[in-house]
Image (tube, rainbow, N blue to C red):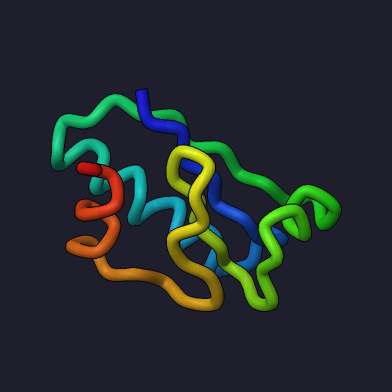
Length: 78
């Protein structure tokens, strides 16, 4: 099972990223858990300067932008 974290305060872009990740998981038939991380202390663990951030299986793959579905699918398929 994939562990995916969306890092952010809950802003519009953070919500949009979470929705996009959920869509890619469903479209690809992947089993994954999406966790929203809004605690700033936890976000700083990943050393991001801008939100939203995306962590897949404890690896930061993106921050400060909303990746497209193809990028997300590539990260989730690894």
